[in-house]
Every structure is written in structure tokens, then in C-alpha cells.
Length: 305
Length: 207
Image 1 (cartoon, rainbow over the protein chains, first blue to last red):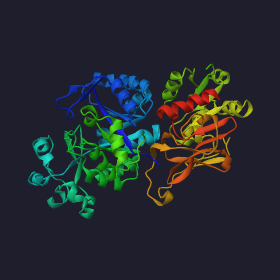
Image 2: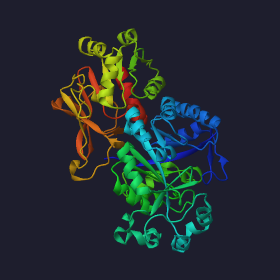
Image 3: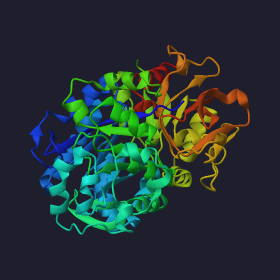
Image 4: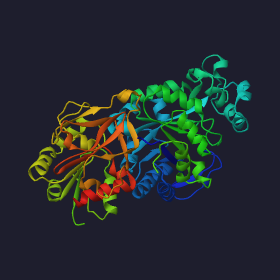
């Protein structure tokens, strides 16, 4: 039976692992190859490297980083961050990446996914989809409490934020996941999430669920689905988002953004994710990948132990 | 191990991780499209990621098709096809129109999304269990049901069931490893399958 995949994510800047809420208060967390090797030994099923370098020099370093990590790893390696062209992807694949994630460039030109799939195969072509809930500022009080403190100002202060784009405000209202889980088909309402690009700086006005469908049709063989609202909050994955996207497409879904406990991972898998990505749970807690997998196995989840 | 393994380079995917693993095992495994290197190697690995027809064309275009036919069917050199490389051992694929090597009486078909009655994610991606159907050196020293890493949308169907070396369940039971004589193939990626994958490559180098 196919096992779910537990995937540690390493944010890489200028050849070093950094951690913290993405792009904020980054701290050095060691060498990528040492981190990756440690996670592989703990039982990681795959490793994702996300290059968050801000400069062309940093990007060039990323290719060297992939080479060094690949030389030590005997599990699959996905690399994303700043991939804009076929040549960018080719450089990373040549360096030893098994899959390449594209985000902003694919939103700007969806044919990039088709060209990547034609050249390297769908199984190499990962859509990194960053989704943010469409919220009216007045709806914030309906959100789970963890989101209020961390994200209210961040959401409304983001450049390009234009509020809810789709449907009546009542459909865009967020309700706690526990309420959603018992309330039937609300999660299928379109337009509750909007695609964000440029590391969350740009809200695109594109419906995230529709974009997932279009991207899979264009050539994406997998979707790395990140909740921009939950990323770095450690308040759990956006389960409604996972349900909505995983039921809309046939390609595998990696859930990302918000994990802090094995329970969070369990919830995401129950919601329909085929794999779960996490960073802080592994970087900052005493839990190893193996600990998390044993906790999932104890709850009946098929894992590779 | 003194045996050399030639990893066939025909521009389909990056076989660097296969060479890396052989390197850790102390096996000399050049990535090559050179005739002389392939002819002098003890064994061959046919890797591959991408589309079936593109792979067939690339092999023809680099003058490797007839060479491999000769090495495998005349000289009976051991060959391990991996993923698309394993599918190329079959006669044809639903993915394309060009004929495969046809060394196995088998063909390659697409996973049906409704296979086994439940909605299947395609590609089949991740770590799945592999059940050996008969003894074979490739699986020597292996746990009963080891997990390997898969990523594919097409799978092999053998007309001769005795060619099925191992099966895996994904909606249906499919042939996840095949072999006949000197020819073997794995639908999974041993080079990305950690310790069990390394064991398969080690076993192949020892065959």
C-alpha cells in the first residue's frame, strides 16, 4: 500500500539553511547537506529545498547547494524558489533535483508548466501554489484565534491587497475548521482562496482551486499547496483549502503551511493530502521525522518506517 | 567488485543519482553514450525519465538502439531498466506510437483513474511496497515487503506471467519488477529508494 510522504522543507538562502517565519527574522540553521542527511536518516520520505535567496548570486549558489545535497541523499529531492525558465529548471535538474517547483512564473505564463512537462516529464513538474483566504477585514473575528494576532495586519498591509475578490462576502467568511468539517459542502464554494505570488507580496485575483485544476491540465504532476495565512503560524494546516484542492484535481497534493504537531499532519492527511511538508516541527522541536511517523502510524496512517 | 556498469546516457533525465549510489558501493559506473565503453562494460543500466517516444527517438538518434539490441540479445549482457527504462524493454506503450525494444513479451499501459474502483491519484508517486513473486538475485537479502520510491503514470503488463518478478498494489496489482534471463527492469527508482534501493543496485552489480 502506498505510504503518505513526510517531507521536511529546508529554506535556503545563500547556501545556508535559514528558519523563521518565511522571509522574516531569518536565522542560520546550518548546512543544507547536513540537515538533509539528518532528516533522511530519521526517515524523511523526500526533501524539499526552497531557495529564498534574493539575489542572482544567491541563485547561483542554489545550484551548487543542490549538487552538494544530492551527493549525500538517496531519497527524492524537490527544489523550488525563483524558477522562471526552462533553463532555470534544467540547471536544477542537472544538479540533481528530481522535481522542480514553479510558482510566480507559472501564474504569469501557464504555458511554462506545459513546456516543463514536455521537456522533463510531468513527474518533474511541481506547481507551488500559495493560496490566501479572501477575507473582508470585518470577517477577521470569525477566524480561529491563532490567525488574528499574527496575520490581521499582515494581510491587510500587504502591497496589492484588495480584499475579497469572489462571491458575496458571506461565502468568503472563514469559519473554524472544526465547524467546516461538520457543515457539509461549504468547502467547495469557489473563490474562498486567492493565488498569491512573489512570496506573498502580490495577490493575483485568481481563484486558487481553479488554478490548481488549470495547472494540472497544463502539465503539473504534483501540487505543493501552501496556505499563506497559516505559513509560519504553527496553528495547523488550512484543512478547508486541502479538501477543496485535493478533491478538485487528480494529481498528488503536498500540504504545507502551519504544521506544528503530529496531530496537524494527521488532520491534513485525513483532509486529503497525499504528503505533508513541514519545517518548524522538525527544525525547532525535539521531534524527529521518525517520532512523527510513529505517532501517525499509531493512528492508523500508512507510513514508511 | 570489479564489474563495471555502463549507465546509458541518452538525454532522458539525470542519471547522476544512479552513479552516486554505485559510487558508494565501490562500483565503477560511468554515464556514457560511447560505443566502446558500452561494449566493454560488464552490465548495463537503462535509466529514463520522460516520454516514451522521445526516449525511443533519442536512442535511435544517438546510434544506441542497434548497439543495445546487440549487447542484450546477442551478447546477453545483463541489463537493468529503471522506470521509463523498464518500460522500454516492452514492445509498445500507450504513451506513444513508436515500438519499444520488445525484449519482454509485454506492453506498457496507463493507469486508469478509476482502477480498482477508487479514484486514483496519477502519477503514482511515493513509497509503495513491493511483493516478490519468485526468487531472483535482484531481491537477495531483502525484507519480505520492502518499500521503494515510485513516480510514474504508466505501468508494464506482461503477457507471460513468468516475467513478473514483483508486484505492487495501486488500485490494481501491477508488475513493479520484471525479468527474463539477462533482462530485468524495475518500475520503481532504486537510486532514490534509500537502503533497499541501494541493495537492489548492489545485487545487480553482483549478478
